[in-house]
Image (cartoon, rainbow, N blue to C red; front, side):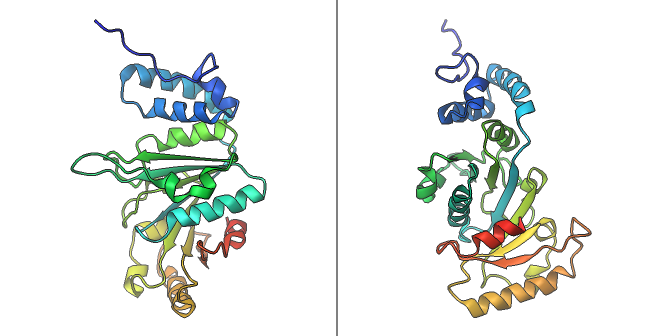
Length: 258
């Protein structure tokens, strides 16, 4: 009978968390793989590892980013990440990829879509499959955030799958929940629908350079519509911003608002 394999460990480290605390990218990737494993022995090892990492976590700005497919989430995150690295930050991106309901597989192509950011030594990008989890995030996204924080990343961005009105779990695990919108999508009624819009801390219209007039009209309608919604934060009216992620326009204003 074959003996069970050992849980993933970090090369050159006595325990998985040693490499994470040292900021080793390979150790960070293996630690996330460990918490994502469904094996009972791996889950036990992951729990012990997280208990030791927890005192070193909690020091980042957590930004959740959601939006419909095609809104430009990956382009926006890459532009934002490069901007933050220029300002001296270390940026981790946890990208949740939709899984096929037929095969169960995922493309996990987010690193390919963020080619410039992925090669930066100050960035870490980890795509994970949704694997049937609802809410727009993966089953262990929260634990992955803690691991990235322990590794020294002071900005952690969680990119959800392309979502609808009810997939809002990311709002509960981040400091700032950003909803990306397209200038020519939806109408006044769409803007005041309950669900994801109610929980957004920031609403950002991407690709405003394609049709500036339509973008200004859409943002004006959204600002007016927000007055009809009961926000999750009574004292906060979500700002509505316009950016062009492809051109890198609006990133500084966005981060100042965050």
